[in-house]
Structures are given as structure tokens and as C-alpha cells.
Image 1 (cartoon, rainbow, N blue to C red):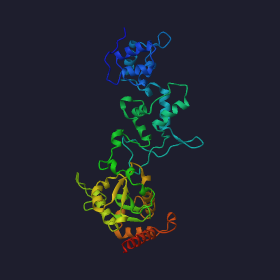
Image 2: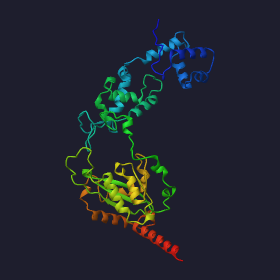
Image 3: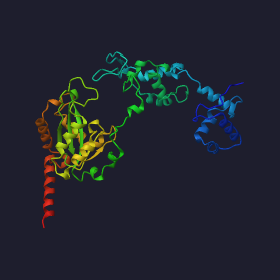
Image 4: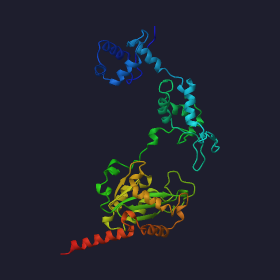
Length: 397
């Protein structure tokens, strides 16, 4: 007699008693939704149970509780042989799409750089292994297209990741993880990779920003960011959305930068939260109050002191969604223009404050098509003049 387990592994799984009820109600011609409602389960759970665990010995599908429980127990046994280890044809397909050679149009393989596997992720500015480099999801979704009638040629993207990163799953060599786009030697848990910033709340996200900011009809709304250089040097950028007027923040390294860092000590590169807060406050407070309405920034740690900045300047602070630079499009475009003066990979700390002011003046004196070929400086002056005239008229008795 087949041995079966009467107790379920957890409440997520159907118990033997529930399978008996399914068998009775199914024999009484009750439909799937009625059975699911009676058991307090999802209709898809009952439908899957009737389809996967039915008895087939009589040549037709008949659902019996004992046979269904036996099928479920057999399927739940661990450890299982990995699908890639048991199916050599599937293994070869996955490995070829993941780590196959890059070929010229003539079909000749291209060796690419010689990269030795060292058991960890490639470093910055290092050569990487060349391969076809399909992602596990691309491989899994392509299989049904290329092999529509072969059910053995199926695998999930998660099974491919486990074959790469979990040694007990075997099948694929560990060094093939270098062929993935990220190239990590160790897998990072999803929760850790999506860590949020504890200083950002829903009330200050860009979705809560006033509508007047988006249409650029009202001046005084700014976008900001850092451009980074060699040795963790940085320059802060502030761009007004309506006039495209640009201000640059001088962020020199602090005393002790370049020496061994003290554990839990303050950031010394010059663009920590306190330094950025003070630099923004010093630059923005020279403007009239009506030209400092809001500031939109990304979720960088340099804005951890945003509450203090708001109190000191009266600026409303809003944060973009993670990995969404297009939500600060004006600032991103300006950063691209600034790279003409401050190329990537150069030491930005060698530029004095006067140098930054000169570059900002050059940028603000450059005519812009979006401003009708006026310069940002002219647009700002025109705005200030209009505001001044309006204020005098309003105060005339």
C-alpha cells in the first residue's frame, strides 16, 4: 500500500482531508468555484489540483484523494535532481545562450579579451568576458518559441539562477555567472538590492509636487544633482526649470580626506549631507524669496539633511523615484553640457570656486533655443525686472 502523509507541510498546502472533500464534491459534479468557496481556497488551487494530481491508471483522469496525496508527496520530496543536470540537451541549450561565443557575420568566433575567473565581480575599468550573454529570463521565454512541441525543453529563469549560484544545484559552472550583465559572483537578495532611503517619505515624493512645477509657468522651481569625478570629488548643480539658469556648488574635500577613514566618522570627500546642505543654503538664499519655491533631487544620501535645508531656506524639497533621472530632465541635460568643462574621470576638486562661477557664467550666457534664443541670464533678469515692476505698481497708492 502506498504510504502517504496526512498532515500538510504548512497551511499553504492542501491537506489529505481537503483532498477528500475535493474528491467527494468533484464526484458530485460541483464546479471548481463552488469547491474552492467551500474550502476557502483559490479556484486556481483547486483547478491545478484536479489537473496535476488525478489518477491515470484506468486510462482516464479520475481524482482520488489517496492517489492525489501520493502524487503531492512524491513531488515534494527533497533533494531533487536539478533539471539541467538530468537533461543534457536542455543544459547545452542554456549554456550556449548564456556563455556562447560572439561570432562575426561570417560565423567566425571572436575570442574577445582574455579574462581570468577570480571568484568575484569584475572591478571598475576592467575587461569583461565576451559571450552571447542572454539573461536567464530571455532563455526561459525563448524555449517555448524554439521548441513549442517539446515539453522537456522548459525551465524557469529562477532555476537557471540557482544552477549558477547554488552549488548544491550543480549543472552550470560558477564562473559562468560572469556572463550575466551584472556579473556578480554572489547573488544579492532582492530585499537588499531594493533598500530604500529612510529619510524619504511618501509626502515628499515627486508625485506630490505641485502641478505648477511641471508646466514651468511659475519660476523658482529648481532641480539639483551632483556630478562626480576622480577620487570621489564632486560639484553640485542647481538649475532653474523655467529660465534654465544654472548655479554650481563648490564642494571641496574636507581636512583628512585621503587618509585612513575613521569608522563611523563623517564623510570627508566634501559631498556629505552637511556639506551639501550648507552649499545649497549659501547659494539659494541670495535669491529673492519668490525664486526659491522648490527643489527636486534624486534619492542620494547627500540629501539626508533635507529637513534642515527646508527650514533654513524655505525651499520645498521633493525626491524623484529610484533610478528615474528623466524626472529631472532639465538638470540631466545641464549636467551633460557641464561635462564639456568637467569630463568624467577627472579630479573635480582642483577647480576653485571662481572657476565654477566662470563656467556657470559661460553656460548662463549661452543662447538657448527653448528660450527663443535668449540666454538663461537674460531670461532671469527679465523675470526679476517684471517682478520688480509688478511690486512697485502694487505698492503705488
